[in-house]
Image (cartoon, rainbow, N blue to C red; front, side):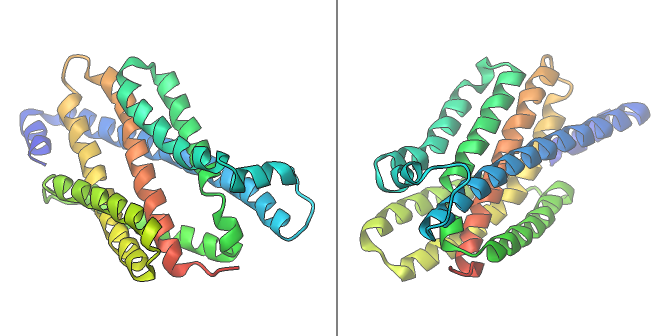
Length: 255
């Protein structure tokens, strides 16, 4: 937050207003990109998941054949679907500086579609109503946490290392629990994961804000910020998706 204070102290009248207006436009771009990505994920997950649910109930499917669904769920293809989003996001993070803005945005939306495919199974396990209710609760919580991260005068940049270590711990615990199949460990992972990504929502929002204030007046800063908005949207998107998935394990009603 010190950077924001420095910008305001060294900028007079119109200059400060321009910076604030630019910051609002930048944040609107971030949230807009995230919203489009969430819509893509929701649509892909719903239509694929609905066909999976129909297949399990021996009803006619609309988009996918029974054979395609069986392949997606029982063959090694399921591992490709599971890990494809991770592969895309890692590749995207490594190459974003070499991509054009349009290409970076396209990769982001491709990632969102793959994520929708990878979580479509939730429509087999949970009722549509409980998924919708959990999504709305997640959206409300996310909005509150992100608003706090944007408006707070407290510098929470120190949370970053702790939260990233927590994410690594979650990944390790989840892998271990694949073999242990412990319901107690799964409950602990879900509860701690929900708290970690709640913290990351506020942290990432403040980081997007302070990064804009650092870069806005630097040479080449505007070009960088165009892609920075996409990266910021990706970070917030991941926070939302993970909060939703962890919360669904507590609030979702099983079919």
